[in-house]
Length: 302
Ligand code: EPU
Image (cartoon, rainbow, N blue to C red; front, side, top):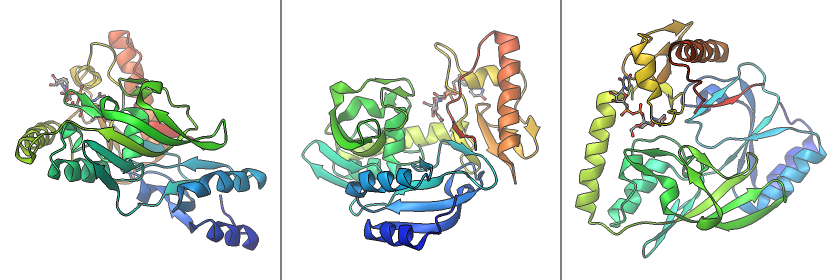
């Protein structure tokens, strides 16, 4: 989807929205898969309501992109413009045990910054790629912790109300890889309350998690992390592994040799390759174990 009307282009600039024509979603996602579309980077949260009103008034469909770490995007010309928050400076502002973090902040950098100021709790998230907003939306977690436990307040754009709102932590439910946010809510900022811990101790926890991750996950390869959620009481990775499916591939989409719930783009995989591999593995697991695996990866079908 392209914005060509000079008046719209001028209106975007007036809203501090930077337009990158024909951006490649393959370059903006960790899987390295996806076609192209205009990318609109938003510098000010307050621009969102008038920006969306403008897009809707001009019948321009849009999708909101976080860090692109858990996303599989279709190939070709995409039928929506892509919205993304610009990275603010600073990404994090600390006030005693509270960290005020912009949704566009890098998750790993946020964990490290808080750690250096003796605020811990998020050690397990250090190797999880993506933005704080993306982690918040899906309640990202690893090694026994999840981000939702620390959320005290969230600033978001509520598409249903067409306005920016603040929700208190207790108004949001955080479950395993699931939150009560509406699908069209846009995360803007979050306040986390973190336990106070000496930096050295946090660093020790971070090292242990990094080591576990390095020994079990294909870190250097293009992937979206785990493709499927774990079913209650079971591990999707273990089931796929037990079926001997490590290394199974369709085109350049491949089940990782290292962790069977990571599917990697081993070259120039297309969205169709990856979707076919997901469907194939899901149906084999269902046949063998009677369990229907649910996607953890978010799919944008054009
Ligand atoms: N296992 C296998 N073969 C495999 C992969 C795993 O036998 O190919 C076994 C492991 O040996 C272990 C069990 O399955 O006994 C669980 O594996 P692991 O500890 O790797 O955890 P997981 O359940 O596969 C979850 C999260 C990861 C997170 C790790 C560590 C999900 C879907 N995945 O993986 O999160 O990093 O625990 O806490 O919840 C992600 O969500 O993208 C992700 C990477």
